[in-house]
Image (tube, rainbow, N blue to C red):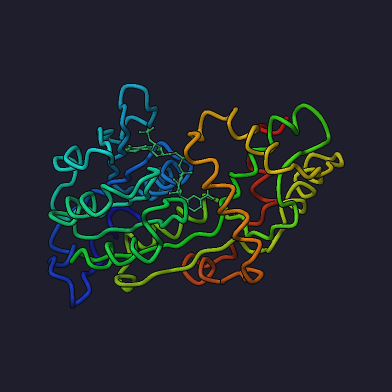
Length: 300
Ligand SMILES: NC(=O)c1ccc[n+]([C@@H]2O[C@H](COP(=O)([O-])OP(=O)(O)OC[C@H]3O[C@@H](n4cnc5c(N)ncnc54)[C@H](OP(=O)(O)O)[C@@H]3O)[C@@H](O)[C@H]2O)c1
Protein backbone atom coordinates (compact mmCIF):
# COMPACT_ATOMS: atom_id res chain seq x y z
CA UNK A 1 0.00 0.00 0.00
CA UNK A 2 1.28 3.49 -0.76
CA UNK A 3 1.06 6.55 1.42
CA UNK A 4 -1.44 8.10 -0.99
CA UNK A 5 -3.89 5.21 -0.62
CA UNK A 6 -3.65 5.16 3.16
CA UNK A 7 -6.49 7.46 4.05
CA UNK A 8 -9.03 5.40 2.13
CA UNK A 9 -8.43 2.01 3.71
CA UNK A 10 -9.03 2.56 7.39
CA UNK A 11 -12.41 3.23 8.90
CA UNK A 12 -13.44 3.15 12.50
CA UNK A 13 -15.73 0.30 13.55
CA UNK A 14 -19.22 1.51 14.29
CA UNK A 15 -19.11 0.69 18.00
CA UNK A 16 -16.02 2.83 18.65
CA UNK A 17 -16.18 6.38 19.83
CA UNK A 18 -13.37 7.74 17.64
CA UNK A 19 -14.26 9.22 14.25
CA UNK A 20 -13.11 7.49 11.09
CA UNK A 21 -9.49 7.97 10.25
CA UNK A 22 -10.50 9.09 6.73
CA UNK A 23 -11.09 12.54 8.20
CA UNK A 24 -7.45 12.72 9.23
CA UNK A 25 -4.74 12.94 6.65
CA UNK A 26 -1.52 11.08 7.29
CA UNK A 27 -2.05 9.71 10.79
CA UNK A 28 1.01 8.76 12.75
CA UNK A 29 1.66 5.27 13.92
CA UNK A 30 3.30 5.32 17.35
CA UNK A 31 5.43 2.23 17.92
CA UNK A 32 6.24 1.78 21.60
CA UNK A 33 9.26 -0.45 22.38
CA UNK A 34 10.46 0.43 18.88
CA UNK A 35 14.04 -0.67 19.52
CA UNK A 36 12.98 -4.26 20.33
CA UNK A 37 12.82 -7.25 18.00
CA UNK A 38 9.18 -6.76 17.07
CA UNK A 39 9.10 -2.94 17.28
CA UNK A 40 12.09 -2.48 15.00
CA UNK A 41 10.58 -4.83 12.38
CA UNK A 42 7.29 -2.98 12.61
CA UNK A 43 8.97 0.42 12.08
CA UNK A 44 10.83 -1.01 9.08
CA UNK A 45 7.67 -2.46 7.50
CA UNK A 46 5.59 0.68 8.07
CA UNK A 47 8.31 2.89 6.57
CA UNK A 48 8.60 0.60 3.57
CA UNK A 49 4.92 1.30 2.88
CA UNK A 50 5.37 5.05 3.29
CA UNK A 51 3.59 5.53 6.62
CA UNK A 52 4.55 8.21 9.10
CA UNK A 53 6.09 6.53 12.12
CA UNK A 54 6.96 7.71 15.61
CA UNK A 55 9.39 5.34 17.31
CA UNK A 56 9.45 5.37 21.12
CA UNK A 57 12.38 4.42 23.30
CA UNK A 58 13.55 5.32 26.79
CA UNK A 59 16.69 6.84 25.30
CA UNK A 60 16.33 8.62 21.94
CA UNK A 61 20.00 9.66 22.04
CA UNK A 62 21.23 6.09 21.62
CA UNK A 63 18.44 4.71 19.42
CA UNK A 64 19.36 4.46 15.73
CA UNK A 65 16.53 4.97 13.24
CA UNK A 66 16.40 6.38 9.70
CA UNK A 67 16.08 10.18 9.53
CA UNK A 68 12.42 10.18 8.49
CA UNK A 69 11.39 8.33 11.67
CA UNK A 70 10.46 10.66 14.51
CA UNK A 71 12.09 9.29 17.65
CA UNK A 72 10.36 10.10 20.95
CA UNK A 73 11.07 9.25 24.58
CA UNK A 74 8.60 7.14 26.53
CA UNK A 75 9.05 5.05 29.64
CA UNK A 76 6.29 2.55 30.33
CA UNK A 77 7.25 2.38 33.99
CA UNK A 78 6.21 6.06 34.17
CA UNK A 79 3.01 6.20 32.05
CA UNK A 80 2.96 10.00 32.37
CA UNK A 81 5.81 10.09 29.86
CA UNK A 82 3.35 8.71 27.29
CA UNK A 83 0.96 11.62 27.67
CA UNK A 84 2.66 14.00 25.23
CA UNK A 85 3.65 11.21 22.88
CA UNK A 86 0.20 10.11 21.83
CA UNK A 87 -1.44 12.57 19.45
CA UNK A 88 -5.11 12.53 18.53
CA UNK A 89 -5.99 9.69 16.16
CA UNK A 90 -2.62 7.96 16.41
CA UNK A 91 -2.63 4.22 16.08
CA UNK A 92 -0.40 2.77 18.78
CA UNK A 93 1.55 -0.48 19.02
CA UNK A 94 2.30 -1.66 22.55
CA UNK A 95 3.85 -4.67 24.21
CA UNK A 96 4.64 -4.98 27.91
CA UNK A 97 8.37 -5.51 28.54
CA UNK A 98 8.22 -4.96 32.31
CA UNK A 99 8.24 -7.75 34.87
CA UNK A 100 5.38 -6.18 36.81
CA UNK A 101 1.92 -5.31 35.52
CA UNK A 102 1.41 -2.55 38.08
CA UNK A 103 1.36 0.33 35.59
CA UNK A 104 -0.26 -1.54 32.71
CA UNK A 105 -3.82 -0.27 33.13
CA UNK A 106 -2.56 3.27 33.63
CA UNK A 107 -0.45 3.13 30.46
CA UNK A 108 -3.39 1.80 28.43
CA UNK A 109 -5.55 4.53 29.98
CA UNK A 110 -3.15 7.28 28.88
CA UNK A 111 -2.99 5.86 25.37
CA UNK A 112 -6.77 5.57 25.13
CA UNK A 113 -7.31 9.21 26.13
CA UNK A 114 -6.18 10.33 22.68
CA UNK A 115 -5.33 7.48 20.32
CA UNK A 116 -7.75 6.02 17.84
CA UNK A 117 -6.50 2.45 17.88
CA UNK A 118 -4.34 0.24 20.10
CA UNK A 119 -2.68 -2.96 18.95
CA UNK A 120 -1.23 -4.89 21.88
CA UNK A 121 1.10 -7.89 21.78
CA UNK A 122 0.35 -10.00 24.85
CA UNK A 123 2.76 -11.76 27.16
CA UNK A 124 2.70 -14.72 29.50
CA UNK A 125 5.76 -13.43 31.33
CA UNK A 126 4.28 -10.97 33.85
CA UNK A 127 3.40 -12.81 37.08
CA UNK A 128 0.83 -10.25 38.30
CA UNK A 129 -0.84 -9.65 34.93
CA UNK A 130 -2.43 -12.67 33.22
CA UNK A 131 -3.09 -12.76 29.51
CA UNK A 132 -6.83 -12.60 30.30
CA UNK A 133 -6.31 -9.44 32.40
CA UNK A 134 -4.26 -7.86 29.59
CA UNK A 135 -7.08 -8.58 27.14
CA UNK A 136 -9.70 -7.21 29.48
CA UNK A 137 -7.83 -3.94 29.98
CA UNK A 138 -7.03 -3.45 26.29
CA UNK A 139 -10.49 -4.36 24.96
CA UNK A 140 -12.05 -2.33 27.76
CA UNK A 141 -10.08 0.78 26.82
CA UNK A 142 -12.91 2.32 24.80
CA UNK A 143 -10.88 2.76 21.63
CA UNK A 144 -10.42 0.39 18.70
CA UNK A 145 -8.34 -2.44 20.12
CA UNK A 146 -6.65 -5.56 18.85
CA UNK A 147 -4.83 -8.10 21.01
CA UNK A 148 -2.23 -10.42 19.52
CA UNK A 149 -1.40 -13.41 21.72
CA UNK A 150 1.90 -14.87 20.54
CA UNK A 151 3.53 -18.23 21.14
CA UNK A 152 7.25 -18.20 22.06
CA UNK A 153 9.55 -16.10 19.91
CA UNK A 154 12.12 -17.72 17.59
CA UNK A 155 14.57 -15.10 18.86
CA UNK A 156 14.67 -17.03 22.16
CA UNK A 157 17.00 -19.49 20.38
CA UNK A 158 19.69 -16.80 20.68
CA UNK A 159 19.95 -17.93 24.31
CA UNK A 160 22.04 -20.75 22.88
CA UNK A 161 24.12 -18.61 20.50
CA UNK A 162 27.18 -18.38 22.77
CA UNK A 163 27.24 -22.15 23.21
CA UNK A 164 26.77 -22.75 19.49
CA UNK A 165 29.58 -20.37 18.59
CA UNK A 166 31.79 -22.18 21.10
CA UNK A 167 31.05 -25.78 20.11
CA UNK A 168 28.55 -28.43 19.05
CA UNK A 169 26.85 -29.03 22.41
CA UNK A 170 23.89 -26.99 23.65
CA UNK A 171 23.01 -27.33 27.33
CA UNK A 172 19.49 -26.42 28.39
CA UNK A 173 16.52 -27.61 30.38
CA UNK A 174 13.36 -29.47 29.22
CA UNK A 175 14.68 -30.44 25.78
CA UNK A 176 11.39 -32.28 25.16
CA UNK A 177 9.31 -29.11 25.64
CA UNK A 178 7.24 -28.49 22.48
CA UNK A 179 6.98 -24.85 21.35
CA UNK A 180 5.97 -23.01 18.18
CA UNK A 181 8.72 -20.47 17.46
CA UNK A 182 7.45 -17.27 15.89
CA UNK A 183 9.39 -14.94 13.58
CA UNK A 184 9.33 -11.31 14.75
CA UNK A 185 8.75 -10.20 11.14
CA UNK A 186 5.46 -12.14 11.11
CA UNK A 187 4.30 -10.62 14.42
CA UNK A 188 5.17 -7.19 13.03
CA UNK A 189 3.32 -7.92 9.79
CA UNK A 190 0.15 -8.91 11.66
CA UNK A 191 0.49 -5.80 13.86
CA UNK A 192 0.87 -3.65 10.72
CA UNK A 193 -2.38 -5.04 9.27
CA UNK A 194 -4.15 -4.61 12.61
CA UNK A 195 -2.95 -1.00 12.90
CA UNK A 196 -4.02 -0.03 9.40
CA UNK A 197 -7.00 -2.05 8.28
CA UNK A 198 -10.66 -2.04 9.28
CA UNK A 199 -12.27 -5.19 10.63
CA UNK A 200 -9.82 -6.12 13.39
CA UNK A 201 -11.20 -4.05 16.25
CA UNK A 202 -12.27 -6.07 19.30
CA UNK A 203 -10.43 -9.16 18.06
CA UNK A 204 -7.90 -11.29 19.88
CA UNK A 205 -5.64 -13.24 17.55
CA UNK A 206 -3.58 -16.24 18.61
CA UNK A 207 -0.33 -16.21 16.68
CA UNK A 208 1.94 -19.24 16.46
CA UNK A 209 4.90 -20.31 14.41
CA UNK A 210 4.03 -22.83 11.66
CA UNK A 211 5.54 -25.89 13.39
CA UNK A 212 5.60 -27.54 16.79
CA UNK A 213 9.27 -28.10 17.63
CA UNK A 214 10.78 -29.29 20.90
CA UNK A 215 13.76 -27.33 22.21
CA UNK A 216 16.09 -30.14 21.12
CA UNK A 217 14.42 -30.14 17.65
CA UNK A 218 15.11 -26.40 17.45
CA UNK A 219 18.80 -26.97 18.18
CA UNK A 220 18.87 -29.63 15.46
CA UNK A 221 17.32 -27.20 12.94
CA UNK A 222 19.89 -24.52 13.81
CA UNK A 223 22.65 -27.09 13.23
CA UNK A 224 21.15 -28.08 9.87
CA UNK A 225 21.12 -24.46 8.70
CA UNK A 226 24.68 -23.96 9.97
CA UNK A 227 25.77 -27.19 8.30
CA UNK A 228 27.08 -28.90 11.45
CA UNK A 229 25.42 -31.36 13.85
CA UNK A 230 24.48 -29.85 17.21
CA UNK A 231 23.68 -31.98 20.24
CA UNK A 232 21.29 -31.15 23.08
CA UNK A 233 22.48 -31.98 26.64
CA UNK A 234 19.91 -31.74 29.44
CA UNK A 235 20.71 -29.43 32.38
CA UNK A 236 19.42 -29.87 35.91
CA UNK A 237 17.28 -27.01 37.23
CA UNK A 238 20.20 -25.77 39.38
CA UNK A 239 22.56 -25.76 36.39
CA UNK A 240 20.00 -23.88 34.29
CA UNK A 241 19.40 -21.30 37.02
CA UNK A 242 23.16 -20.67 37.18
CA UNK A 243 23.26 -20.18 33.40
CA UNK A 244 20.35 -17.70 33.56
CA UNK A 245 21.94 -15.79 36.44
CA UNK A 246 24.92 -15.07 34.21
CA UNK A 247 22.57 -13.37 31.71
CA UNK A 248 21.99 -9.67 32.51
CA UNK A 249 18.55 -9.79 30.85
CA UNK A 250 17.16 -11.92 33.67
CA UNK A 251 16.83 -10.29 37.08
CA UNK A 252 17.35 -12.85 39.86
CA UNK A 253 13.73 -12.39 40.96
CA UNK A 254 12.54 -13.53 37.53
CA UNK A 255 14.64 -16.69 37.14
CA UNK A 256 12.56 -18.98 39.35
CA UNK A 257 9.37 -17.57 37.75
CA UNK A 258 10.76 -18.38 34.33
CA UNK A 259 11.85 -21.89 35.31
CA UNK A 260 8.48 -22.58 36.96
CA UNK A 261 6.75 -21.28 33.83
CA UNK A 262 8.71 -23.64 31.60
CA UNK A 263 8.12 -26.59 33.94
CA UNK A 264 4.37 -25.84 33.97
CA UNK A 265 4.32 -25.88 30.15
CA UNK A 266 5.39 -29.54 30.26
CA UNK A 267 2.08 -30.40 31.94
CA UNK A 268 -0.01 -28.67 29.31
CA UNK A 269 -1.50 -30.42 26.27
CA UNK A 270 0.77 -30.43 23.21
CA UNK A 271 0.32 -26.99 21.60
CA UNK A 272 -1.30 -26.67 18.20
CA UNK A 273 -0.46 -24.19 15.48
CA UNK A 274 -2.94 -21.65 14.14
CA UNK A 275 -3.23 -20.31 10.59
CA UNK A 276 -4.00 -16.78 11.82
CA UNK A 277 -0.82 -15.27 10.42
CA UNK A 278 -1.51 -16.64 6.95
CA UNK A 279 -5.14 -15.49 7.09
CA UNK A 280 -4.15 -11.94 8.03
CA UNK A 281 -0.99 -11.32 6.03
CA UNK A 282 -1.77 -13.58 3.08
CA UNK A 283 1.20 -15.91 3.23
CA UNK A 284 2.32 -18.70 5.57
CA UNK A 285 4.19 -17.93 8.77
CA UNK A 286 7.96 -18.12 8.45
CA UNK A 287 9.59 -21.33 9.74
CA UNK A 288 12.38 -21.57 12.30
CA UNK A 289 14.64 -22.53 9.40
CA UNK A 290 13.75 -19.18 7.75
CA UNK A 291 14.43 -17.38 11.03
CA UNK A 292 17.85 -18.97 11.51
CA UNK A 293 18.71 -18.11 7.90
CA UNK A 294 17.80 -14.47 8.61
CA UNK A 295 20.00 -14.41 11.76
CA UNK A 296 22.78 -16.78 10.74
CA UNK A 297 25.54 -14.28 11.58
CA UNK A 298 24.55 -14.40 15.25
CA UNK A 299 25.40 -18.11 15.47
CA UNK A 300 28.77 -17.88 13.67
N1 LIG B 1 10.28 -13.95 24.09
C1 LIG B 1 9.13 -14.57 24.01
O1 LIG B 1 9.05 -15.78 23.74
C2 LIG B 1 7.84 -13.81 24.22
C3 LIG B 1 6.64 -14.52 24.14
C4 LIG B 1 5.45 -13.81 24.30
C5 LIG B 1 5.49 -12.45 24.53
N2 LIG B 1 6.67 -11.79 24.61
C6 LIG B 1 6.64 -10.33 24.86
O2 LIG B 1 7.55 -9.67 24.03
C7 LIG B 1 8.39 -8.83 24.80
C8 LIG B 1 9.75 -8.71 24.13
O3 LIG B 1 9.56 -8.10 22.85
P1 LIG B 1 10.78 -7.81 21.90
O4 LIG B 1 11.54 -9.10 21.74
O5 LIG B 1 10.29 -7.11 20.69
O6 LIG B 1 11.60 -6.78 22.77
P2 LIG B 1 13.14 -6.83 23.16
O7 LIG B 1 13.94 -7.02 21.91
O8 LIG B 1 13.30 -7.74 24.31
O9 LIG B 1 13.36 -5.33 23.65
C9 LIG B 1 12.69 -4.80 24.75
C10 LIG B 1 12.00 -3.51 24.30
O10 LIG B 1 11.27 -2.98 25.39
C11 LIG B 1 11.64 -1.62 25.57
N3 LIG B 1 11.53 -1.31 26.98
C12 LIG B 1 12.06 -1.98 28.03
N4 LIG B 1 11.71 -1.37 29.18
C13 LIG B 1 10.96 -0.30 28.83
C14 LIG B 1 10.30 0.72 29.56
N5 LIG B 1 10.37 0.81 30.91
N6 LIG B 1 9.61 1.66 28.89
C15 LIG B 1 9.54 1.65 27.54
N7 LIG B 1 10.14 0.71 26.79
C16 LIG B 1 10.85 -0.25 27.43
C17 LIG B 1 13.06 -1.50 25.06
O11 LIG B 1 13.23 -0.16 24.62
P3 LIG B 1 14.41 0.84 25.08
O12 LIG B 1 15.45 0.02 25.80
O13 LIG B 1 14.90 1.42 23.78
O14 LIG B 1 13.70 1.83 25.91
C18 LIG B 1 13.00 -2.45 23.85
O15 LIG B 1 12.48 -1.79 22.73
C19 LIG B 1 8.43 -9.46 26.18
O16 LIG B 1 8.74 -8.50 27.16
C20 LIG B 1 7.02 -9.96 26.28
O17 LIG B 1 6.19 -8.86 26.64
C21 LIG B 1 7.85 -12.43 24.45
